[in-house]
Length: 247
Image 1 (cartoon, rainbow, N blue to C red):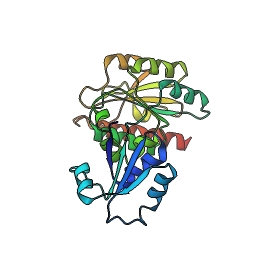
Image 2: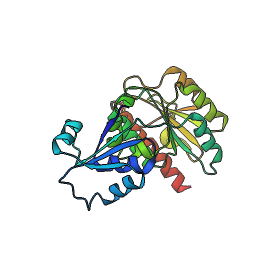
Image 3: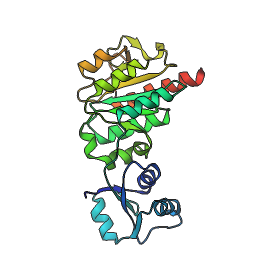
Image 4: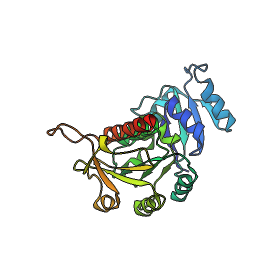
């Protein structure tokens, strides 16, 4: 059985708290402050996870160039939620929902940052396609400060059926585009929305653009370069949150 190495206390706590994957072992440095790690150790023991004090050399070899802070969790790949579960969740909600559709993201750091801000501003679900970020779950988890584990995420083979299911449930699909026909601050975001944001290399594909109910641009200076995708997610999520708080 293959194991993925996750470095650091924050990542390990998120993994043990969220039950998205199987945790095989938790390795701690002999120099660890066990008082500081008390909650982490309790989480592991509650889930019958083996906790071991490991040699410093072993921790360094497993972590490679990544700082581990004396904590390493050896785990399986994450389990992602089926699209059917997402649609059932939408059906069960009484308040407007916020979903992010992250399409064409390649970089694991970018994905992690996007998930971090999406969670911070109230996203209830994330829908992604299968790209390179999937090969580096530790970086996604670390850069998301644990949001990668906490958020429900669906990664279907094709986004189209999932998006069609959202449309049928009255979720407005908004494509974030530089050439969008509506300005972000002129767009009413108080109802249920799914923001579609494309990765930096290719952006949103044409077939995803065609599924959108509207295209929205983030106002910037005329000569400004394109925003990083994770920054765009932050701006979109923050404005959606602001409007809903205002009522």
